[in-house]
Structures are given as C-alpha cells and as structure tokens.
Image (cartoon, one colour):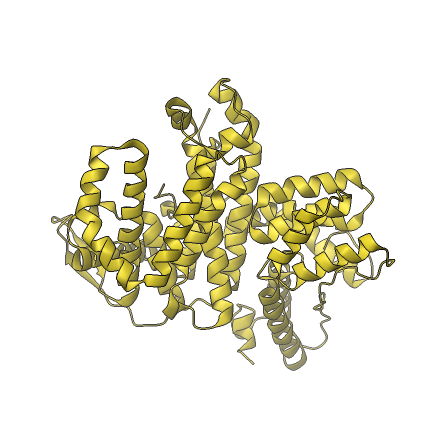
Length: 289
Length: 206
C-alpha cells in the first residue's frame, strides 16, 4: 500500500533533487543504525516524504555529507547525517512495515511475509515500548480498517478513514508541533495524505482484487457485478478523480498555511506535481491511449 | 508585525503594481471561499489578516493610495430564520458544526428522520469537514437538486468544484505547464475582484 508519494523529478532543480536524495538515504541509514540491515529493504518513498516534511518545518541544523553507502557502493552520495527526525521516520517505517506484513500474512499466508514478520518481531516490540500511545492508536486504526474490510464497507470515504487517521497520527511528530496551529495543519495534511494513499492504492488494485476476489471499496461502492473491468473503470474514473484531486487540494491548503523554514519548493513539487501526476497516471490519464 | 515584504513574498523596493499583483494573488490563495467548511478556515483567516496588514502598511508608507480589494469578513451562517422547530433543530446542527463539534452534529443528523434539502446540505458540509469528499459531493448535489434556487447550497457545491480547479491552477508553478488556462482563470478572478470593489459581482460565489 506504500510508495505513491513521489517528487516530480524533471521539475526539481538539481540541488533540490540532491537534498531529497540525501534525506531518503538518511532515513535508510537511520533504519540500519536503529533496526539492523533487513528492514532497510522496505524503506519507501512515503516515509521519505514524512522525513522531508518534518525537516522542512523545523530549524535544527542539518548536516549533509557526501559518502559511499553499502547499498550503492560504487557511487558517492549525499547523505543527511543522523538526527531525531530521521530516527522517528525510521521507527515509523519499521512499525508500519511490520503491521503491513502481519496483515499480508493473515490475508494470504505468504511465506515471505512470515519470514519478514519473524525478523521484525523484536523491533516491533521495542517500538511499542518507545511509542506506547502512538502505537496503540495505530493498532486501533488498523483494527477498525480490518473490520470495515471484513464487512465489505460500500463507501470509499469510510473505508479510507482509518488509514487516514493512522497517517494523521504518524505525521504528528511531537517536536515539530511547536504550536497548536502547526499541529492542526499537520494533522489535516496527514489525514488527507493517508486518504489519498489508501484511495489511489484501492484504484490501482482494482484488477488484482477482482481476480483474487478480494475486498476493494470501489467494487463495493459502485456495485461491481462481473462486467468488463475497462467498462467499470470508465464508469467510476470521474468520481475517483474528483475525490483524489479534492484530497490533494486539501493537502495543498495545509501546505500553503505551514510555516516553512526550508525546502518549501521540494515539498510543493511533491504535493502539487508529483502526486498529481501519479494520480493521473494511475487513473489512466497520463498514458497515451 | 512581520516584515511586510516577506509576508507578501516580494522583494524590497517592489513597485506599487508588483505589490498589488502579489497582494491579489495571495488574497485569492487564502480567500475564505477557498477554505470554507475546512478545519483550517480560522488559520487562513489569520493569514489573510496578516496579508492585509502588510499590504496596508506598504500602501500607506510606500506608495500613495491603493484600496484593498478584499476585507476580512467573518464567515457566518444564516441563522436568523423563523423559529419553527425544524429551523431551530438545524440551527443547533449548524452551531455544532461551527464550533467544530462534529460528533454532536453528526449524531443529531443521524437521529432525525427529516430528509429535507437542508438535511442533505448539512450532512454534505459535515462530510466535507471530516474529509469524506465523495460523500460530501453526492449530498450537496442532492441538496441542490431538491432546492435548485437556494444560493447557499449552490455556493457550497461550487466551492467544492472550484477547489479542484484551484489546485490544478496552482500546480502550474511546480509543474511548468502551459499557462493558458491559468491566465483565463486569473483574468476571471481579477474581473471578479474589480467588480466587487465597485459593488458588482462577476463570480457569485466569491
């Protein structure tokens, strides 16, 4: 369900892209430092966005250095050095990955996910202790989501709500919430971020879910009855697009009110361009047909 | 007070025209209509107040003249209706929504068996505040279908639709796309601002 929140690379200036990469690599490093080598394989772009956003509104000094890393030993890369935000992003990545694997295991019993689960279990316990309130809220939201999916909830909005609230909690990083206004804005961005990720993922998975006869909120809301997938997709694409773009607009509204200390253009690139292009791409607009 | 040039995102020594242009752009961005029925509405209002203050300051201390095309106005519901039972019921729902007490408003709407246009409208607004846009849209559409003459319902529906246009319009800055469509919109909004300052109105919802 992850990996949709990407920058629009051709529109970034070279220096901006370097910073984005440095943050991405920084999170990867933090995962290795705090959680060992295996979880690094599951770092995703949504978490890199989290680290970028939180870094952009705080004014701690950031230390970026050019170094070699183990994953790409041949090239030197700019890497953001260890800080509290990277640690937090790494923690959230491991926590969500574990829960995602557990969900997959309960769903389809894949052996790969069981192997991942076993490897991460210890880390998961440690994170439960480190974030007792946050992890309970996250667990609670995932439970809610599982119940909605089980009862084949026929509303995309409603089905997206638990995951949206989960992201609201993830993005609400204490030290970045310096005042009530910032917290309100961050939460609204988080809610809509989660909603967008859940919704676009559901649309992206339409075909697979039909094939595997799995739950998908679009199939339930728009009453799919075995017709041709292309026809069905055409029927719902306008509604889906409205919902997704409106969600992006709400994220953008939060963005316009945030007090940025740096990197505003990189965050703006992702919110206004990267996510819009991703939306069009998955809805089938960006492609030449 | 923050540096007015910083607030208006312009360079020091900007000309009067540049100041006005920057001001209009920002007013459009943070206009209450853009943030209507949104948890960030109050914050946008504060931001706009800051922009107005910066603009007034620069106009007074820099160049002469310069009337503001927009003045901050509190977004209020029309609550002064006849005091029948239904109206006071819906007024209470509106008060709850206004105060951010969404759970109470939702409970009230769920429990009544009235399904008037106003019910669909308020349910739509509530969904919008919660972030449930697909539901919000269909409820607002129903309200407008039931009472096509109601300006309040139509405005809410238009605002929702406009949000998507506004997002795409602003994304031009980051995506470097063809700006023709943006120019048309900008033209329309400018016309609207001008008309409004002269007492008329070009786009009725803002």
